Length: 235
Image (cartoon, rainbow, N blue to C red):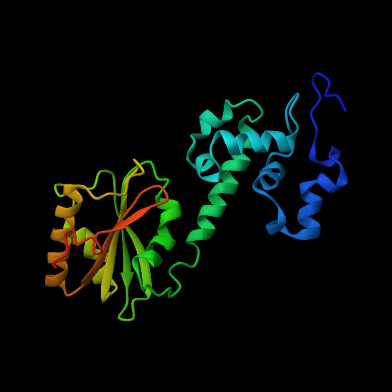
């Protein structure tokens, strides 16, 4: 069928076997591709491009969900085929997904390795545009009590106040904590400043009787355990 000027397919106008909504209903959401899931959010394409094609173009252009999560709202609004309504729906859906990942992470999850901490925080923190420093507070069995945000902005020894790092741990009488911060550049390799900050935090933990188990630096899809590398921790 030839596409005429000004014509665009809506989801309901696609062949029944190609309609993402019907496939979701019959097979469940897990059976749908990323393109189909995005097409459901977009609902309609644009002149010369049906909704599935538009969804595929967006995922390719922004390199998947993570790119769509990072791209600025106003920039996305200007993209042909979107506009404010579609952009708002897409950003809302992505934020719901992000919050769902965070839901329940403090429900007695036990930390056994740096990978466990990364699994809790890497997807979200790897896409932040500013540095965030957080503490994962643990009980005597290394179960998560709380994840607290300590700083937003550049993490350096001049700004870090040790009392702030340990405030929630002391309030909750935590047995241990793990420090986590991200590098917006995407490169998780620790800087000399990261190593200095880690040393200061570890020493303060000894005085406060709170064991600092690790300091993770998170990049885009990667992380570094400073304890595993022997950086900032006594050998």
